[in-house]
Length: 142
Image 1 (cartoon, rainbow, N blue to C red):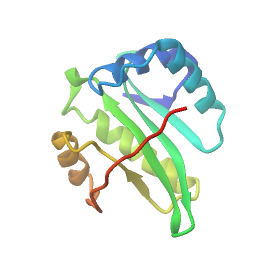
Image 2 (image 1 turned 30 degrees about the horizontal axis):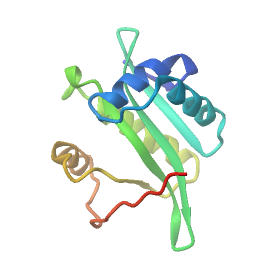
Image 3 (image 1 turned 60 degrees about the vertical axis):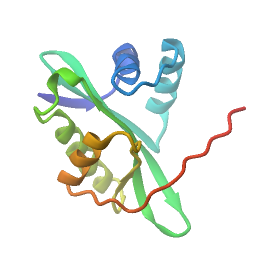
Image 4 (image 1 turned 90 degrees about the horizontal axis):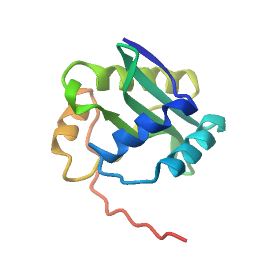
């Protein structure tokens, strides 16, 4: 088991993981462009989990800074191949992200999880995360 920073060559596997099980259907070329940007950003980080020389999951962090609380890292995505659920891949990615966040001055981790992802909620609670509030998510694309 290895966790390393993502590379641009990981874009295809990340895109596949986004499509299933996360249900984010997004063009591969756009995923590659976004990953390229994230890899060069000082306030974003993407780590991948390797098993048997194959990427089986990833976690994406983004700096979360506001005027009403301490600096946190925001988990933008955490996904593991469903064929290896329950084998510790998600937990190890989350632990790795937490350690990286501490080393980079964050006071904690925050994340949002879709209301329908009840198994993910149980996982996060088991990892010591507490449910803070319910929200409605808005978006406007240009």
